[in-house]
Length: 138
Image (cartoon, rainbow, N blue to C red; front, side):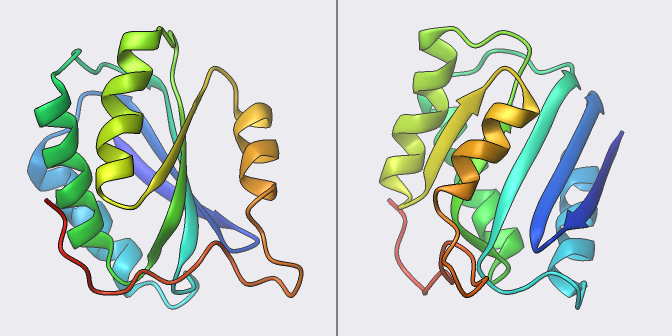
């Protein structure tokens, strides 16, 4: 199950159990067309209740590229992911491809830590981490 909410310009995506590509794309389309979501919004992905299989760095890069494509221009350049177990290998699978996609990804065990990290990227006038420009992601 997937759903999202918006809090003060922050898009919070909740994942419970497993989701299909079709379900993710439908959610991304709703976010993309939601007038309450500002361009360049920071995203917090709450995957505490998700049933996600460990995958390779190539798989992570593919998912990140697809997510960015689906959320453009709504997604900014900063994303926090809250996961049950954060081992260095899992975190690496998200962070390294994020760097290659010009996306800063933080991996956390709890939502308050993720929110505190995201706050560091907020601009004083309320503008979020930055509007994504068109760029090639390799």
